Length: 140
Image 1 (cartoon, rainbow, N blue to C red):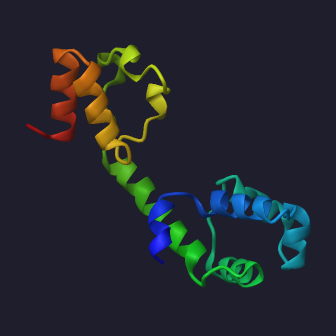
Image 2: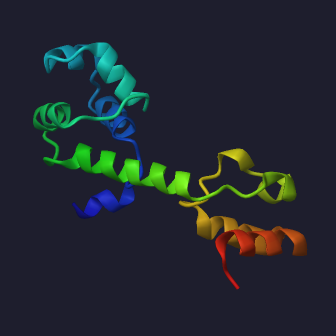
């Protein structure tokens, strides 16, 4: 599963949604074809519900995906969510919003985009922002 590195942290429902679109399969008929409620599949593809083992096995078999792919994605997604809960979010009021002019600062994944955030603040931030980001990430 070397290719999973590219999609780690992605909700399995997002992956499934893209896979169904690529194959030109509508969600509701697909759900019914595997004996599942369309609402269940819809909630998963919207990221509102987690993937379960039984459903992932059905989907993987029908779509010819590697066994365990969707559950692996679920585990990596869960890990990402837990890391975000463990890591505090910096006080966004202390940052000039112009530093992150091309994104919504409150939507930044501070764990996943650590390198981007540090590089951006060091390049465009003032001494106060640089000090805050160093303190936040505990770097010299």
